[in-house]
Length: 103
Image (cartoon, rainbow, N blue to C red; front, side, top):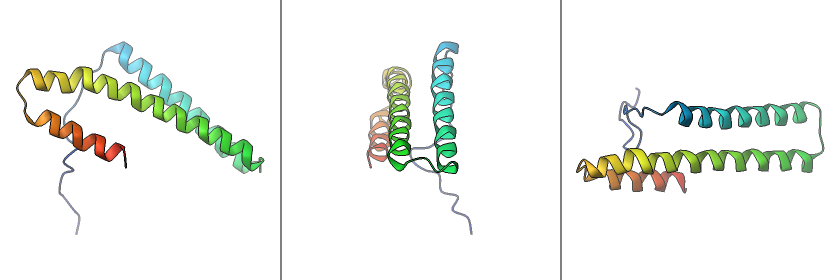
């Protein structure tokens, strides 16, 4: 039996991004994808463990930078718009999302 309960943080809401915003986010993701492929190749070629670990650290840092940029967009856009519109639940939703991010 499948769990059909909707995650309280995930939703069917969408965010229309500017072309620049989308381009910046996609550029970061494509760079991260390239880093991950590089790590896969290093493992396949039996690269030295510390060299792989350094590349994993760089990919982790790149993902963290992506999260920071996306989080800033979310706060400046979605959260602030919801608050201005009188959505009292916007802060609670934001806090729940942060709690999941900071596990």
